[in-house]
Image 1: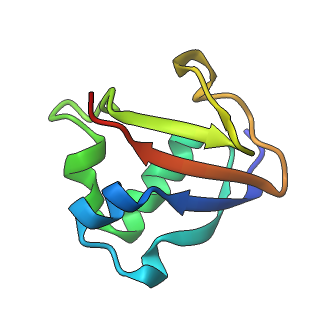
Image 2: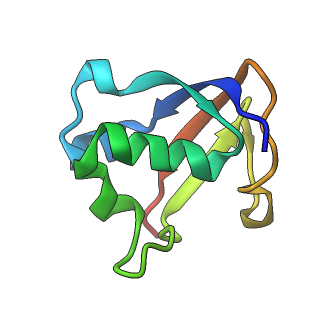
Length: 94
């Protein structure tokens, strides 16, 4: 899949739980979809992993995405991103 430039922002609650600094709350990634952006986030900030993946390395259902301000449905998580998209990774406990 083609990787594009994406602006990624992490929801403040996930930042707080993972003890991310202000500098870690937003970054630019080269990724093909939202799931890849989470993998990039975990590579950059390993403390996020326990809040995003279960023991079998599956994305937790608490993780949601906004793409350009619109909520992505679960079946859209692997949808190809476009150059310049803005993705927000949200931690949404029920």
